[in-house]
Amino acid sequence: GKDSLEAQETPEGRIVGIYIRIMEGAMTFLREEYTICAVFCVFFGLTIMGLVSWGTHSTKQGVATAVAFWIGASTSMLCGFLGMMIATYSNARTTLSAVKKEDGYTKAFNVAFRGGSVMGYLLCSLGVLVLWILLTVYKMFF
Picture 1 (cartoon, rainbow, N blue to C red):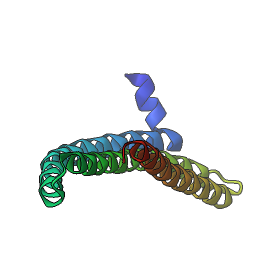
Picture 2 (picture 1 turned 180 degrees about the horizontal axis):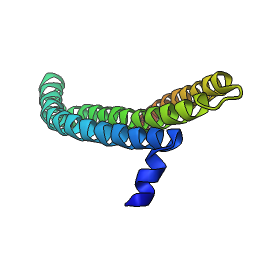
Picture 3 (picture 1 turned 180 degrees about the vertical axis):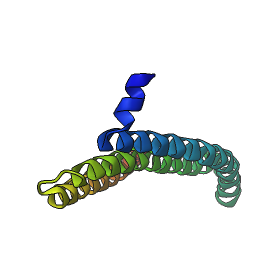
């Protein structure tokens, strides 16, 4: 109602309103993209499983390869989701920092740099962790 209109009349309120719209658009984009990716991954994983099983004459090898593909694809999609969340949130915080009169650009740079650092470390760590888990589990079976 009236409170939300008054909140949007301040620079911070407008920034938050824009952030919410960007977040909604990002979520819609990811939902559509991941729906298509999921269908592709199912069919491509089955193709990988069939071809590897046929080429190695080992169903176990084919299934293990397809599972590794599906885990990698899922990790990639999770990283994309987390990256989008961190990026949109960091962008809004960077903008809020930039509109401050005192040292705005310095604070904005620091916020953006930290947001990028968090995203980089998180995504790389997640990828390495999932790879380590997969290798550890596969080592038990092969």
